[in-house]
Length: 189
Image (tube, rainbow, N blue to C red; front, side):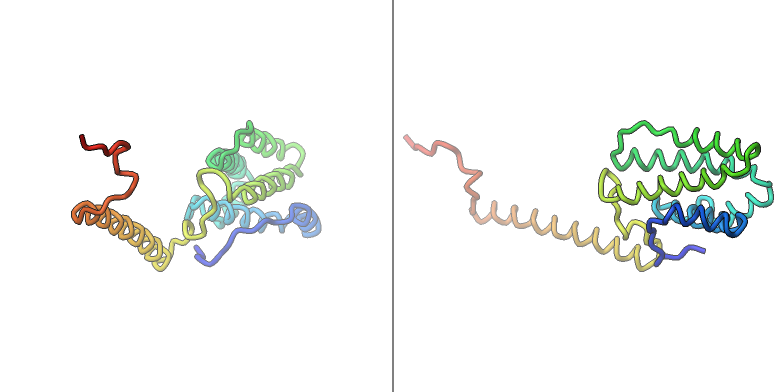
């Protein structure tokens, strides 16, 4: 379920790793759930896919779905980093894909992969004030009140621009002139 009041925050990667091992990997499913929820929220995706869907499909397909999901997370992170102005080469999609495939051989790389994804998400959170898609809390508010607020702000900005245009027109009709409109040389000979 989408919660409009939920805010994305950085999560401690080391704590996630320790809790996953202490709970015999049960916590890792909760971590994946939270990671997907935070990713959707940060990128303004309402449910692509939902966190519950990722966890259920990972369990039902015995981890096969996580291979696809890991690659898609990498693509999302790369796209978001580029949108925020990052110029660094980012091979996250392939790294996550290879680590997830090695999970079938080694068995622990899911935790490593999730930790790397969480670290990348934390980096994106730190970058949220930079680039073209600066962090804007109203951007993520999909509630009717948030939409009304956004529309009201847009209407107020349009109204202020209209008033400024009317004032410029009025100044032209009444003969008032700004000094920057006067010609340089006003000699009448």
